Length: 499
Ligand SMILES: *Cc1c(COP(=O)(O)O)cnc(C)c1O
Image (cartoon, rainbow, N blue to C red; front, side):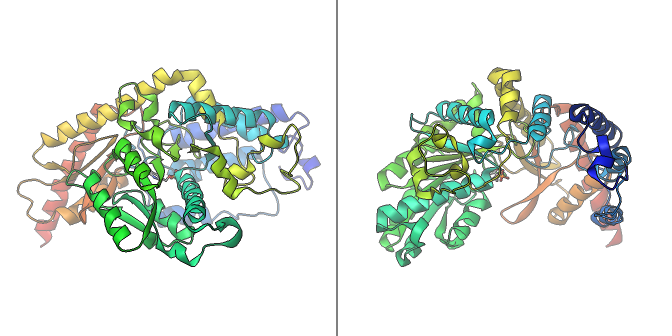
């Protein structure tokens, strides 16, 4: 469509009948997915970054004249969909990167079309109610008390910053009688320290840096041989910090570390936090959704002691990015970041005044992401969602059993959630394992067999399965493990024959 005004472009833009145009456009988009994405029988095309970039860069990004949506979407199908990661493919097993549920995709159509903005009530009347209702339900599922509050986030990176921001403001007021939002940080804030597992997510350190405390304000508590945080180490670290005249003020409990899925002993961490007057933040980005599992919920025992919680729906709950939440046990702690803007949420006492979400979030204009889990949970119920999580965790333990029984493979540690870390390590392979690992991962990706992740365990490269795809079966895993061993052998043989 090459109209020179919106009016000439007619149905391609808004109307006359916008809904009919949307229906047609949606059909074209689904056709693009069908040919370029769902038609593929591998999880990735295997093409290189340079090849993909060169093809895409051939398109003039801001052409002066347009063309038909059909033509554009056909191009998107071959240029973009075909070189994207097949998240629905059962052998897509690399990251916490899920295939979205169909109910969530239906919700996504509605979210984008209505384009409600979650900052002020007059831009999102019912959407604000949906979000607030879900937050209230989730604070209750997590056992937080009546005064709890929270907000949807772009993910746990944002939720961790928000939690530590509120913790920092609270601590600066509590310890130094100082208003950080108004006056910035006092010199004494240089003594503030945040405690977390040495295997906590990197965003804890990132947040400390962004909050003016510095990356070094984060003190990692050593984990044991099984990657589990030790309470003795936590207590001795706190004693040492206090002896050094430092001021520990926040403790992060991780519910699901990224590599090994370890859940810190939240109950005991909560007790230590209470004893030392620390803000207790739980990073439940990965493992938080265990609250929906009858079988595994107990493993989060102690989460109800949290001052704040980060949780992602876009990992174990199969929601399209982005979809996370931040929960706050004492909603009044939000006062430390309160803002009012005359055009958005003026200081008034009208009926809307308590319904603006803007000052609960780090974002201003914000998507109505809450509709996605709303529709998903209404459609599937927590029984199905919980059972889905249980199956992913069982797949991980079954996979670990297969790896242990295979003398060409070595398991790095027992699984806890849905990740399995291992490496190719046949009895005859003296010290070639480290270099072979990356090459196995690259080879399986290039030939379209499987998407695996790599990580390092004590400095040595390992492979990692991350199961968030309900379509992955143990047979898929067996196939990929066979391919790992075959690739490992081929790589070792070719290295030996050339050396
Ligand atoms: C994924 C993850 C994060 C980061 O969350 P995003 O949703 O990617 O912003 C933080 N902590 C843990 C433990 C995670 O797994």
